[in-house]
Amino acid sequence: MKIAVYSAQPYDRRFLDEARASMPGVEAAYFSDRLELDTVPLAQGCTAVCVFVNDILDAPVLEALHALGVRAVLLRCAGFNNVDLQAGARLGLFMARVPAYAPEAVAEHALALVMTLNRRTHRAYVRVREGNFALDGLLGTTLHGKTVGIVGAGQIGACAARIFHGMGCKVLVSDPAPTPQLDGVAERASLDVVLAQSDVVSLHCPLMDATRHMINSTSLARMKRGAMLVNTSRGGLIDTAAVIDALKSGQLGALAIDVYEQESTLFFQDHSSDIIADDVFQRLMTFPNVLVTGHQGFFTIEAMREIAAVTFANLACHMQGSPCANALPHT
Ligand code: NAI
Image (cartoon, rainbow, N blue to C red; front, side, top):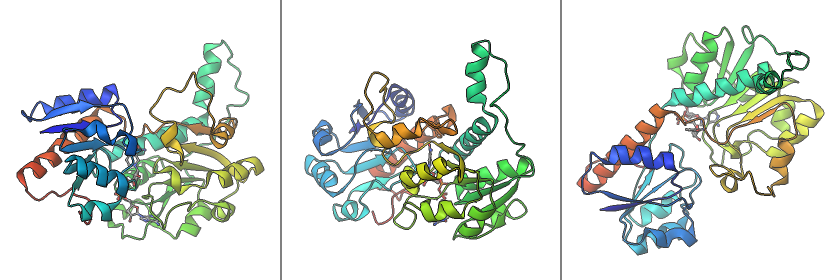
């Protein structure tokens, strides 16, 4: 049995090889290329593919993989908005994900973004190294006592709620599902109330048709003037053009994102010698109150180990024909 690992970086190989050692007989071929129709032939001779957040798993790609003999799709991530579930089910593909590898890692990254932007440590770092110890421009706010709104209180959102509660913030959560795990930590509220009352709004809900561009010109206008917006979930939750307008007018006080709607052409690659053609992204880069990281919320040693272990546990379920708790819905 051989797996084609797409979008593979050296760190993926390190952790996947470590976990693969427990499965003799399973070979892996690593490709830095993203999975898309043109790169399907790389999986020649493989019966499984292993993919990440920006690989394309639409119907044509799944059909082409199936025609090549691929029978299993292993997502080494939680989100599966890039997968055509119906096509996968129709083709009888085994498709499984890693539902939670380290929710704390992503929640902690959201905190890091908030603290960096709020206390300007990214600017202070550069200044001090240049011998500039002036404080002008580094004024922040004390988060203790502020209101933090969590949109989507699942595994990651719940961790984030507990973190901000621990810092003495009032925490509001908006989630259609019940949140008994946050009793005593956070108050439930509608999205409108969360937007209107929060000094920091942190997005942790999945990207679906219902949540695409949930942050748009209308919802931005409902936010408290000068509030901070944080997105470590999926770029498509935000209408970036509307966010730029809100930053220009001062309605939005600061933006921290680990994900970006058009990230698939930028993130996980070194573009430092390239001309970046994405004018929307480049406009974001001009704001002093915008902080962007390149989808690194998950990137801790613990999470990478968990991703690799669960990926191979999912593969073992497929090979043994045993039920898999991590199988994607409808597949
Ligand atoms: P989860 O499935 O545990 O929680 C999602 C929550 O969002 C659920 O409680 C659900 O009821 C809620 N939700 C659904 N629709 C909503 C709506 N319209 N408004 C408010 N809440 C809504 O997912 P988990 O593990 O907490 O992950 C959240 C997202 O974080 C994932 O979908 C993924 O896109 C992203 N993620 C980002 C990573 C990164 O490295 N930046 C790493 C892992 C996940």
